[in-house]
Image 1 (cartoon, rainbow, N blue to C red):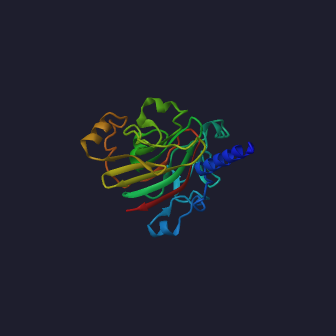
Image 2 (image 1 turned 60 degrees about the vertical axis):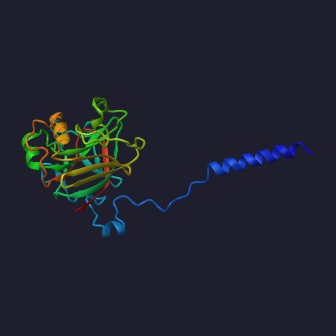
Image 3 (image 1 turned 90 degrees about the vertical axis):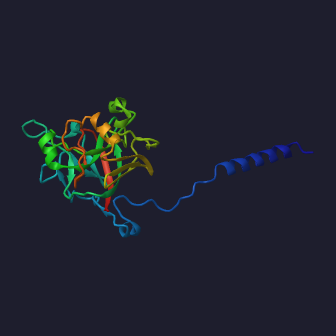
Length: 260
């Protein structure tokens, strides 16, 4: 018998195993374009809060304009310019920044957005925000409200201060569970559901936390948090959506909402 035949047969068999174990990847259709809505989404009541080109519908907290040196539109995303890169004014002083707030306010809603953060960066998406309370109690035009934390968990020291300060947490209140962050530099998909007294945070298709206002568990969390001295902080209200100016580079796009 030709000695090459078993070798060839074995090689062919191994090739079949490799082919079966690692089939070619198949596309499931084109990825949706950022800052667009499908016909199905429109039928479900979704609408865009950011058109991908302008700041229409947004302004600085406590301002009638966007702090243009701190917030820009880059490659179809709202970008927080890192404070270290913000140009100085003619007198040598830094240009004033602050959080970015929606012109509209919302009560019961589902919010979806895509986000990414710079290395060792920190930011957030806030909701149930009272602008009046924020201006009265918080410095530097920083919004007071529930916060969907945005963080480089591996690079920012806040991640060492507790799991309730890591990405997708309800900041300083509830830690996320079962989350899967994408690699730094890639966009993650965030989702917030806020309806009645019930809230949820989602990350990349996974619900990572939920809570109910007015419960003993939530009261206990609030009493242990940085918000414990702020009267009315957790009261249910019609509030704004806010992108946080936390000095670090952050990007937001495909921001869309549907109101219940």
